[in-house]
Structures are given as C-alpha cells and as structure tokens.
Image (cartoon, rainbow, N blue to C red; front, side, top):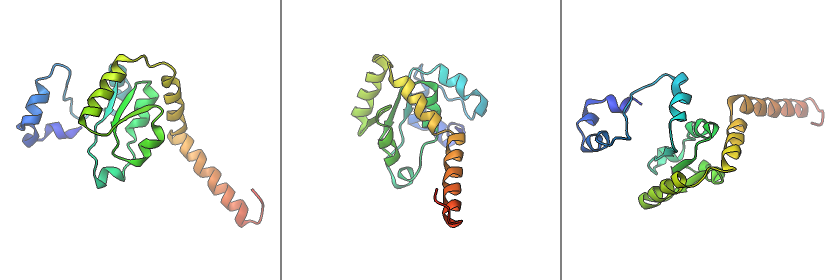
Length: 149
C-alpha cells in the first residue's frame, strides 16, 4: 500500500530493517488486477494487524482473496470475524505465537485445507453475498405481502 511511499516511514528504523531483508519488498500501490499474480508467488499469507478498537470493527476483505488463492493464512486475532475462519486461518495471539504459526504453515502440507479455504472464499464472494441479500429481501417482502416464505 501507500504507507511505504511516505518519507517519514522510509526514514524509520522499522522500514530500514525490513527493506534490508531479501524476502521483503515494498512495491507501493499495485493495480487490483495484479493481485492474483502476486499471491501466486507467496508461500503463505499474513494478516499481522494490531489488536485495537478500529481493527476489531473491520472485516479484512483481503482474507477472502488469500483463501481463494489456496494459500495458507496466518493472522493475529484482531477481529472476532476471524474466529469463524479458524479451520482455514491460523490465529496467533502474540508475537511468538505468530512466528510459530508462520513456521508451522510454511513447513506443513496444505492438504485438504486448501479446498475448504476456496469454498469459504466462494461463499464470501460479492456474488454470493448479493444472492444472500436478495434472498433475505424476497423473504421479507413475502412476509409483508402476507405470503409465507
């Protein structure tokens, strides 16, 4: 994202330390169409969000992209919605747990989790959500019209 383009961040010790790592790349904002290409090169996907009030109220839409890619996902437990995805997202509760979880997913075969992850992503697609909303609306309209649903 754009944070790596901010001069203050580029001068920070955290940026300099991360930029010195051979497997960390700051690419800036990329077109949405390139996301699958980048995901294909990942060994695993991470959601290392801080646990705070703002993040707790946000659903990370990118988790669906990660799951659809068939990549294993490690996340902090920053929002309650991730608890529903524990079968395909490895949650970590502290820094040491995050490191251990990442090591674990990198050394474990993806196995049947991959197909289940893709199924969950399909069920969370915009099309699937729109169908669910239409079904709810139609059901409510039928009730208002006095027809059992």
